[in-house]
Amino acid sequence: MRTSCAWYLAARVDLVEISRTIQDRMNKFALGCVVVLVLLLFVAVFAALAVGGSYNRLVRLQQAVDQSWAQVQNVYQRRADLIPNLVNTVSGAANFEKSTLVEVTNARASVGRVRLDPNKAPTDAAQLQEFQAAQGQLSNALSRLLVVVERYPELKANQNFLSLQAQLEGTENRISVERGNFNSAVQNYNVAVRSFPTNLVAGMLGFAPRPFFTAQTGAERPPPVQFNFGTPATSPAPAASP
Image (cartoon, rainbow, N blue to C red; front, top):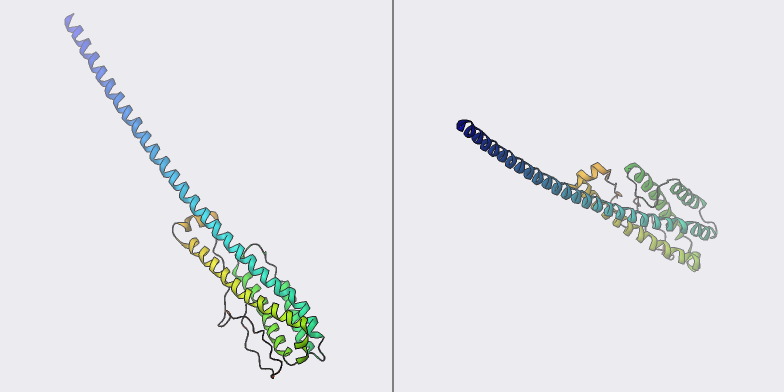
């Protein structure tokens, strides 16, 4: 009887020890799971903050590009709006060369046929090249028109023409400035899109690089808009696409 009781007590002690061991292991396992979950949660929050920060930065840079593009469109539109009054004023001069006026009018019309969103910078380089080519054609036509005008001294007394000349000169300068600002904004955006680790976010969320305005040598200078009525006309310098 005593042996049975001793065996029972010993077995019970063993069961208690085993139960405590299992409980300890379960507690350790639960604690380990909690630690792992906390670490995973921390990593997830850190990743979300990093992705969110990169996304917000890309949005800001993209908005800067679109804003610069809107300014470029505004100054080009201002030039286009000046042209009808300029043509009408110049055409009033006696025996003015009609072919030059037709060339300017046709070039302005070709610019109007290139349809781009004025509030969103193009993502297609071919579209931007088409826009630039049309604007370059108009710049060349204007350069020839203004050189021809020098052969008509009576226009220097026309106050309307002189006012248009000053406005056009200022607009050409603004075009050069705004194109430079646009290219700077695009450069900042493209650097972010291609830099690690932001490029991972850009690839996942569809932020594609934007094309630049390209320029020929001397394109940073606006077409000449000076008038020397008392001197013979000189041949126009080759005008670069704006």
